[in-house]
Length: 541
Image (cartoon, rainbow, N blue to C red):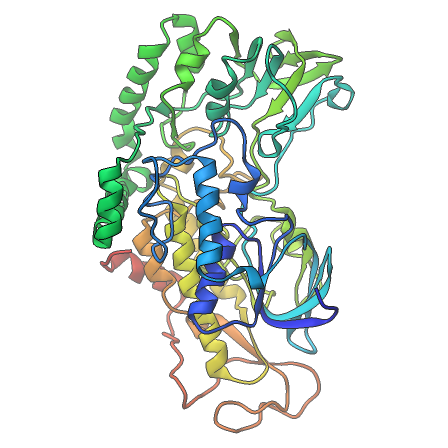
């Protein structure tokens, strides 16, 4: 990386969000951008999570870009290897490698108010950018709980997202900590080869069968020769999940039937009443993400597996101790304990216009206008930001909606002309967040009686979107300039040839600049009103 390199856009991360942003930039005719990636290859969470059994719980044809359909998915639910290969394919198909800077972890991003740009320090040098698009994702930094005695454990310790493939598990006594989406895939994948497996379960998950199968050669040939059939398949998968949303967001009691199906799924594999009692959740299904596996329960019923109904509380030498006092001697500890989702480490490295970090700005909870822009951080956007997560569908749908918003954001900067920045108004951010949180009150994620990783330290849900993907698509189709303060450098001419001001320092204009190039899309409506309009509207994603 050249010292003092300057680009129009810097994208952080090369997972689905970062690569999607890069593709959209090129399709918008923007080539003056870089993708900063801390690792040595693309893939994001699908590069980092290579544990045994790793796979997606969203159907393959829905868990892929609409602009890059893959007719050759081998299974209805794809494994990590095939998803990572797909992302490598997208990188090459759209000529993105020339833009990617590998081994370039971002150390610090600081807003330069004098020049209206971001100064970025990376592991391989410094650069600056007019706009930053942060696509680090919420599932990128593993979380390992602080367990007394962990530092003195003599055996092997690693997180599921940092799997040690050099460590031979055969015949070993293994402690698996956690029962989330990763753990239910790891447990059946390693159960046959380990000597003994002790599962530390703080909260049992609801598990439904995984209806997975190989996609036949006939189906793949059909999708290759008639591309509309791939779109039709994707549309059907999307539509089914859109119809399910109301049960999660407005009528959680309707999920009772799904609970009965989940209990029957458990009863087929778990015959021991005591074990069934341990594995039966006491909260409404959907409060935590519903997990899919046809192998998890059968693995737990095997004689070399112990389920401890309590979290890991202490380690004494090679002895692991549960909260209920249960002890086990183990050779290895595998943490399937999730990620820093509501306290993303990247927020500590972003310093905004007021000289404070994004982490400080979000100390009372993450919030961003339309899941993208934070007040006090001009020309900075995030992909998969606050309250953009989903509980039942594909995040690629949300990512593509945010890419629409990103593209219009950049168009608006072009229309405004000159050295310009947009800063989300605090009132707009607060209004948007207030509406989202009000809608959240009746959802299963807030009323289901569980504590999940969707909630932050104060118990507020800053992760999930409380609506359909089509609602979010409409809410992010265009940038409303009325929700932003327009910042210009004094003396820079606007699109009509007038001057912006003659003073020193940066000028914030209270109204969007006039232009003859393109009308600004300000509606004059508040953020809550815009959301209400989106709720009343009809349309497809």
